[in-house]
Image (spheres, rainbow over the protein chains, first blue to last red):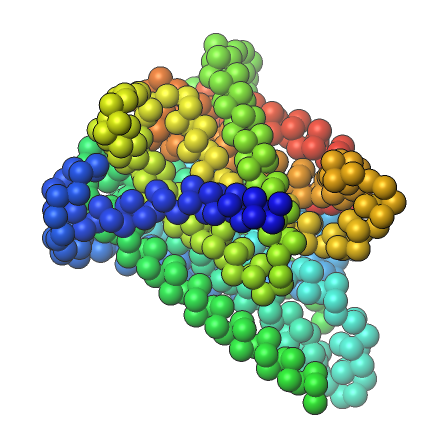
Length: 267
Length: 268
């Protein structure tokens, strides 16, 4: 039974990884063929780095993800604090609306924002491009920030905040010294989640980007529409490499923290 | 200081960029080009009944396959030693960090008429088979892309099932089959329902997977919506009506799923 489980896990992992490894192998393929490996080359990587469209959309993606995740973290943290102090009914109402972009299919969020931007574009001086993309990204990022922070308030004793004020802290100082450190893990994980969602988003960006400002996923999409472009393989390999490195580093940091926490407890 | 005030900027943002756009979808769905009220868009959606049926059918199949594959994975994972669980979970989730366009593109490479699978089969004197541009390829793409969405919630509920509960069931005379059906499955029900929604919602609304792996002959609801907004047949009113119907379908399915999951489970 145990052996069966191992074989099964191996089969599922193969299913998940074989397609990616095939992409990686063929990123070094000399010919454009997608099935016959004819010889080793690094040409596609060189072409990739010379491809202005890819490089500029990569830079654009990072700029948008950084700004959107910072703005949505600020907006979302303030919102979470406010929502936490609301009465039951308005709180439930706001949380239900906040959940909408998460529950709704991405395509619906995308077209709904597109309709809004078309409306603005016709009446004001708004063009589809960087600004609309940024607004769209902030809009789908904020709910994740709020949802990451809200559970932290449940663990927080509300009397601590009052106690700090009784002991002479100003409300702001009490907040900074007592509440903020407690919700900080939620703020950070919310920020990271917003950042990765922004980097990765295709569907909502596709409907809100216009032709002047492209993100990397949109560029990838237009590349896949062309028949054969081995540069995608090279790009996939690099992205895979970056992801693996990030996850390994993350794991090492978490393990260190876990060890440190464990030794604290022992002392 | 009233802390409530801090949420004001977000509330303004939320109304303008979440509430108003959704109201605009509803408004467009019930108006014609000149802005007059009409039911025409909604009734026109009926013309695409076959696309709706296909979308629901393919995404239901994909969801079921995901459940069947993921359930044993999650269970095996949850019974491993603790330190191994973390590493294995990371391995399972890692492909999700690659953009789904790249993951789908990988299958284009594999399934193509001159692709690797046909090449290998050809080596044994089989084929070539028509693998890409079929509804099977679309289902495969959905399963491949959304499988981790099913594994994750299943694993997180099963991880909490105590080993001693399973042992107790067996001590009390349960066969391994009845342990599965009377203990493990009921205890993992919240994971099953949230896994189903996490796979079904993106599967039914996708337009990339069907376009990349389904060719032109396997249009889904997502393709239909995309065509009304960015494609050749520009018609935002019809597009909004289709989006509205899609939202209603998903709402109905989620309500049904909620019936099965215990009281305070939130479906995310």
